[in-house]
Image: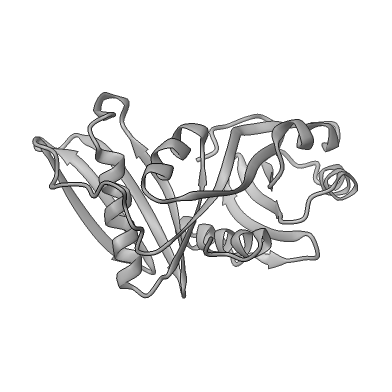
Length: 222
């Protein structure tokens, strides 16, 4: 595995995610990081690399403003009873995953599938890949933020009408190659259960479970 400890992988993920989303610099603490995000429904987030019942309850008891998120690297059934009143699980269960870059793919993707075209661009340390149909309709996308020797893959998605055509795999290959070209040697990402299946076929491995919680209404965690 690229990271000797989960704490190292979490640190890399938090800093890369913040760059990818244009959020504030993560503020460290004994239990993890706090990040100002500044979006409606996602004002800020606490990311706990060391989660226990007392710490989670204290943080969630103090945070009474809607739109505050908490991310912890424990299963949902562990996190839920630790939350203070007014909090609930949100964003679905997931996984923190990592890989060495460039990823040694078990099945290298071929050229763009017929009927699709891909464009990529890099700005402020973030490379984005966009796949469209030949008539310009959205099909798939993803982005990767490089922060020194590590890179964080983020917001990979394929339109349901274009799934099972290898587009997600193509996007991942393009992004991780771009990060390796910029000097990154290790990658990390947060995956849904569905995304995990894709990423494992492209050389990624699970580091820890990843569970989210929210104070207030439950908007999409995007």
